[in-house]
Length: 436
Image 1 (tube, rainbow, N blue to C red):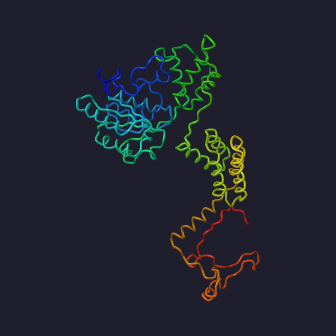
Image 2: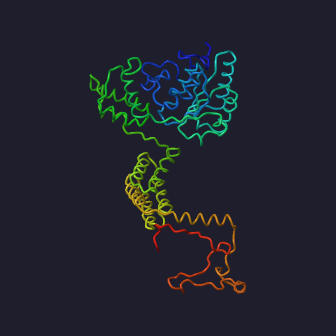
């Protein structure tokens, strides 16, 4: 018997690849409830809603190559499939984790053959495209340029950093957002009511359980449906009628899976929000973002190091004691570890947020660095040089140097900058700086 073609058609008009074939009755609820048309697709109205550029492209039965960037459960894979179906394009799904250049070449060859025989264009969907290395991304590029294929890449990582500039310049980037509570609620209600693919009215949620499920899903439709399915099984074990309780939802979800990637965008976004909240003297925001990081599993020592930097960069001379507080928090967090490391970190965070702010140290250093860049390595004035040999003394080293301790208060009127910078202001005090 011949091996089935890579592009064997399914009833939806897409290639029978990567799960587009009819699902078995016992498939997960999240898979069964995938939207079958753009009209059923929930969320992302700014991208695919009526009047958008992408919707106009669909109406013309041709979509551009694109990158779909968004968190898990926001609909990236589903949207790619619906775009293929709506434009009668052939759909081939690949995972960047397992696919290689040889797979791409084979798919492109089949796409060219399909186009040549009048079987239409091909959409190649590459999941986790950020995992493709440079060579693999370069292998896609010429085929996107020539129009051999339409590329739809999906990623949870910022494509600015993870996708080659050449490929990025030939695709449109669409940013998918986490679904809102109303949208998650619509998806949950649809799954409960759908007799063909969903639960068909066999179960219900009390109002508290529904609210908890929506909250714990955290914008992830797949997570919501997976939890709903398990919660119904738990409630069903108690008998009929099946009424899902808040406790069932908690057991099904176990614990909210906060969106966080310690090497990705969320990592940088949260630490940026934390830093700016402390700098802005807002203890509420600062503690919130601290908790967001620690609850999601961030390395507490990463946060502790940022606290030390904040103490010197943003509090600085307005409260020199802040550095001691930050250093103590760093030491104690390292010594005791999580979860108790939370105490010194939150206390240092609040202290820094409430402290007066001064970045005069940073500005002074920048002024000095700018002067060096402008004037180069200027010679040290002779009176500031050490005269450790007779020759040095004969050359004037140390001559006319004024020893500060011989003067009242230790302050001496003496030039300490190179001659070319004698009148340059390096340190410009902030009004908040402590007067020493």
